[in-house]
Image (cartoon, rainbow, N blue to C red):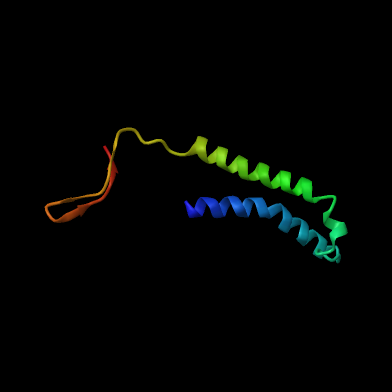
Length: 85
């Protein structure tokens, strides 16, 4: 679960990092407010669309297992891993 959250946060932050990199390449100060004020809204929209798109893609392309899940359990003193039956 933590991995999924980190991926979503990184996808949201990615457009802001790209824009900051663009400002650095253009030799402008990326911390100057005048460069960000017009673009923050669109950067946030693009970041949200990327995050939503990845969640949708993951939901539609995830493998679906048939059958019931049998959780891990002990059998004759040994641990049997969980599996789908």
